[in-house]
Image 1: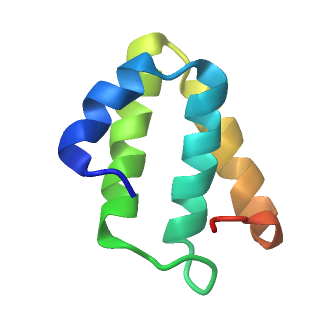
Image 2: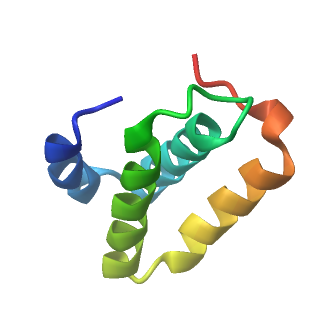
Image 3: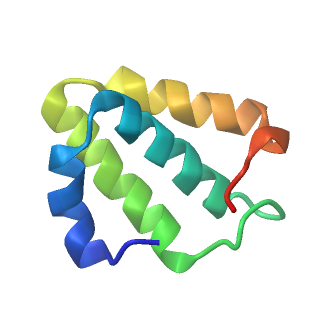
Amino acid sequence: MMKLEKLERALRHMSNKALMKFVKRCVCRSLPGVGDAADDSREALDMVYVECSRRGKERLYDTAYAYVAHHPDRCDIS
């Protein structure tokens, strides 16, 4: 995963589609038994939520999170 220090800058330049894909990847990584449960995955999710809020797109985050939470079998984090 990208270093958290660089993540904030990168998030600002991501399209909404790329941001949604990144949310899904972070959620997959943070699910027990699915991902590697990296410590920075949860912190990255917080940072992504802040970026979605800054854009006024909280629903984008919620939609991506809910999708992965309901379909953890579709996680492809390789």
